[in-house]
Amino acid sequence: MKTCNNLLLITFIAVIFLFIAGKIMIGNMVRNVQNISVSMPDLSNVQDGNYIGEYSLAPVHVKVEVSVSNHQITNITILQHDNGLGSTAESIINDVVEEQSLDIDAVSGATVSSKCILKAVENAIEN
Image (tube, rainbow, N blue to C red):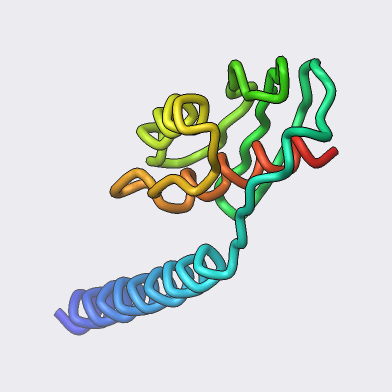
């Protein structure tokens, strides 16, 4: 009986520890996402072509290919999106092409992935 109680106590402590560690990690990720600054590069200086850009904010990594023609974004292809649960954010690329802007609201429930996609697009155009 004593061994069973010790096992339950250890399990309870481990669960509490994992819960606290998870809350700390999520809090750090939210703060990091709030610090991501995304701005639209001046497309008038961008030549026609395809440009690759990447951005990472653990646990999300995004790599995109941005096609520019006549100083407009004509297509965005997501080449890699390691996202955990944020795959719904990929729809944001349609809004970027339609609006010709990176000032797009994040997809609800996929804020980290949304911001990483937008920042990867910015990095592609700037480079």
